[in-house]
Amino acid sequence: MAILAPPILPSYLYRYRSLGDNGSFINRELEAIKRSYIWCSTFSNLNDPMEGFYSPSALLKAQHDYREIAEAIYRSKISFGIAALSDTYDNELMWTHYADQYRGICVQYYAERMFNQLPPNCTLARIGYVNQPTRISTAFDRSFDEAALRILSQKKSSWAYEREWRVLGPVGEVRMTGLEPVVRGVYLGARIRPGHKQRILRAFEGTNVDVWSMTIDGYDHFWDRIQDAEWRKRKARKKKAAKKKSSSTKAKKRK
Figure 1 (tube, rainbow, N blue to C red):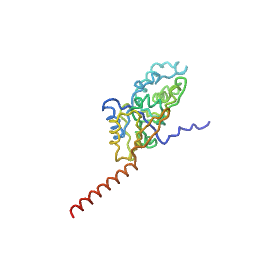
Figure 2: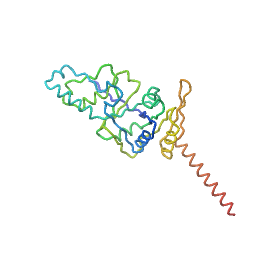
Figure 3: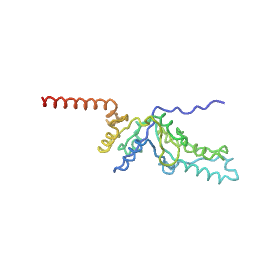
Figure 4: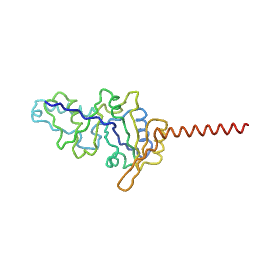
């Protein structure tokens, strides 16, 4: 029998987010980054109405307690929270569907750090894309959580453009704990509101989180890093030079 290799974790994972019209959404997103957590929703709250469907095998359906098995699998499915990520920040459809038509942001995470800092009751899964509902056999007739994880780790192939990875864990706020920062950068959509842009720049000034801005040019878009470690160093040097100049001017006046 051959060995089934696990998926290779990319260097970064990304989460597209809407910032909304008022302050509540951006407050939520900045708080999540600041406190190093992600929000996991139930599968019934996701935008794909086919989420959670599966195909029981004939042998499983023939079990005398199949109704109880199906109910147990359902309870297990709804007990899992889901946080959707992608391995790309550069997908136009994702910016449209999940980042409020380019008005939102895309948060960049160090993938390995995220994986290492998630609690032990979480699973990081790469979504498999198929054209038939996930097959569940008698091998899962008592392994209800494993069946639920299998079901929630596959989607219809028409969603393959999302290149999705999922955090599957408890519903609600899932904290990442560790000494190393998990967020690497924040990408701003081309239509982001000026007020939101300024809030994000202020929020990450003096941190190791880089901020990128999108520019649309015809059928292409480009990224400019508008705030990073070098920018912060330059700003610190300018501030230091201005302070030194001010001190020198005051000293001359005293003479």
